[in-house]
Length: 321
Image (cartoon, rainbow, N blue to C red; front, side):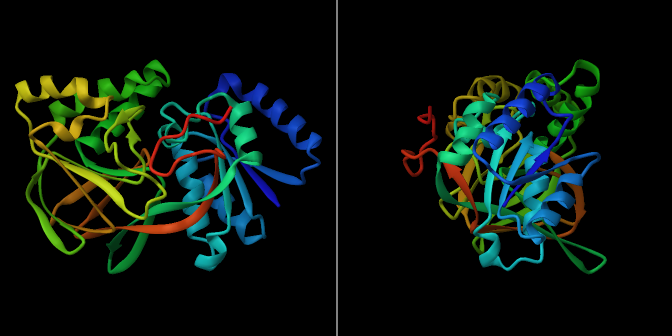
């Protein structure tokens, strides 16, 4: 059974055309379905959980990275067993500003192509990241499909979101937000362990742990990240000098950030971040805050997603037409 979740606030201009095409396609395919429309923050989380617990084994999301992330959290927090969740068929029709997770699969706002892929692509197991933290001794989980970021990454996201209220939804929001965050950022002491080995013990300028290679509206931050390989890729960035920053900015979009001397890439399945300070982070563009030690873990083959029939493992996908 197919359940559809629609965020009407993402990509408003194309909403009517997308809905009309979607309903026509479903009728032509004689596809039974139900749909839900989000009305407030985290509503997609509630809707996705409700749908899968009622037996819907196909979930199609019309929205941006935030809506997709909420839906993933709803599925992962449902009362289904890990085996049942791994059989959920997940699909997206990108409608947001950044569409960073969709970018890996070669999907964009060409909604007809996205819908064709959902019904005719090849089913592929999909990894999901999980951030675990504690409040008042109670364990909490935040799942992410694309990436989780700390330091300059998180602050850039906050300012980029603020700019939407003034200049609308544009890719340039994140770039402006980045320079704004540079002025405001206060470094925090942290200790990072990767698969049990100490990697970093210093003040944090930037830390990102990713399931997919893109974030921030097309920044190719972790070029080797692949949401099918069972590991997470990340990078720790020392505080750069002004000169280093100027040299490094052109590398934001070409996947060459790891070549800069103040950037340190890493990869693994389990991560522990120890800090005694209040820490803000963004998970798939959704900002949250925590205190104390927290953990990040890769859940291999957590869900399924339809991908192009002729995709090659470990490579970005642009061949489904």
